[in-house]
Length: 390
Image 1 (tube, helix red, strand yellow):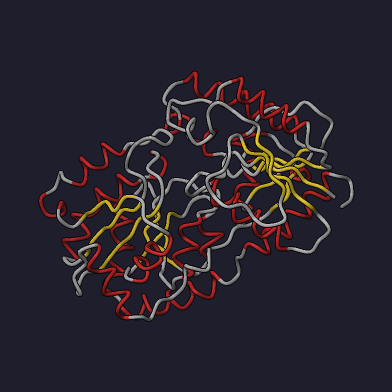
Image 2 (cartoon, rainbow, N blue to C red; image 1 turned 180 degrees about the horizontal axis):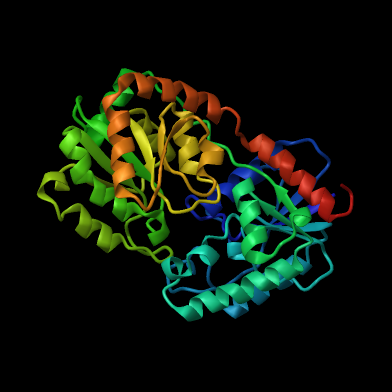
């Protein structure tokens, strides 16, 4: 069996890119009788797995370049991807993210991964204009019609696909995600000391870390606005925000976040933006943190939560979407619309060392239930079903 894969999200630093790279790497390691060809829009800057064929469509503009808030993929680039995909002699064609979907006019069965329905749930928070939303809806309708099987990454997302997009449950296959091995507990005192120095963390600071994007549904502004109340109870609390702050990916509110961070004199020097950092540095920061805070209004999976738990770091999480499904007993939950609940849960975990220790152990045990090999096995099942062999 031969599977062609849309690899146009390969260069994305995290999110869809991480999912694509990690899943393909796990698929390539398995001895399951399935071979793969990656279809890139432009030549990749990152290494591809050994034994996996590569084809370049030669698009004028890469998918990652087109992923700014008001950006869009050129029609000619989508046509070039479709032509190149038709030239791959495959039994199934797989789109790891419907976000990078392009029409493929052939009888090849297609597996389409819908990570979530956040655009449908919060269109006003995701799209800068109604026109952007209408174009998205048209693309999603065509992708849904072309798909032989629909893949998604959590049961919460599967339920939403039926609710918002009318996709029957018997057409949906689940896969999962995993944390990179670099996310693990670190006992080396020198590494932890260097991490504290890098981020100006004092020994008695209680670090809260946020990792992710700054789209409005991520709800980061509420976390920033909660800091004065958290500091009133826990004066050594410190919030470090990790993620791209250049404002050139999707439609975010980074300027509003920066303004919020400096609005209150008590908290302005207790909030810092770390920008993008490497996975190794992210794991080191999580090992210096009392908790990861994940205030998102909705998630399809929530990989930063799994990465934190793999470092034995508890998660303070929204009680919405997939987060309770992924985190389980590895953290505490709050209503993401309630600043009061966010403050209360944060103060609770910062003040109670025994609670933190218990949650730390539970988080590590919970994280062990997720891995990319399991995700690959589940994806293969979907490919076989699409090809009529499952």
